[in-house]
Image (tube, rainbow over all chains, first blue to last red; front, side, top):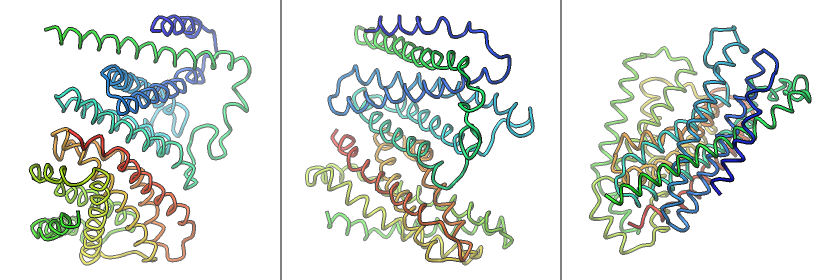
Length: 217
Length: 208
């Protein structure tokens, strides 16, 4: 199965970076947006395996849950960084701000903070099984709160996001995501998501080897 | 279970400690700002105070009771325990936050226009905060990390509650503001969600 993930990831990845496209910030669509898709995907994987762990505690689901949370965090940070770079040149005074009062930015930061807290929590417990259980509980809690915050809150107070497609801003679909870009965007999403799965699977294997070595000693 | 709660109520030490904590924190803000507070600043400061006070209160709630926990463990089921805990902490935190509000009004002033909306907000948000902190503290005690770990764990999760509460209480400064019902409903839904999560997840923390 791991081989399948690997080949699919490689297959989707190769054409992505090599595509000739507009030499503008809109290129960032292929990276920034995909980062968030990958992050959500990999956090969802982590959530599923956390639930699985609580239902039926085995080491495998714990490793998968924790390593995909770590991987998701990397993608989250990358998403934030690419977003900040993009923001700097498109919103407000060009080249001045790194941050904006935007509900989606809040949501992103909250997600990252809570998953960093997840890592800290894991580090602070020594006993493997206890660590796995407590971390799984926190993971489920954090994920649900994050989804609520990211999905529901922005729609509540008419706090409009500055992002395209929100609050009267035209979405990308309408004016610049023409078919040409779509040809790149969809494979890019697939590619990044697959890449995230691939990195997570490598991390999972590394962690398994680590634990195996640790147990042998 | 009731006996346990009564026992808790009798421990005057925690009540006194929290009251002193409120007084000193509020007085510090008074010293820093004197009387010239804009409603926005008032609002921001008030909710920050509420976070700190409720964290302090929540950290007292499980502390130093390891032996007792074992005893309770043999007596009641985890579901009963967490529900009792949530109710108790909710009521406790509500009283504490009302005390904080009174102290805050005394020293810093009170720009609230629509007191009903404000109190409803306070009730709903403090309820949510207290149940979230109860859970966070249960997790943090398992982690053996005490107060710092709890702050790290709970803060990101508190933000949705806090933002909604802050928005609502800034609405309550305007006497004839409308549009708070949707936010109230959201706050209520958040509370229910947190309580449900606590109910579902606590048993996994409980058995050791």
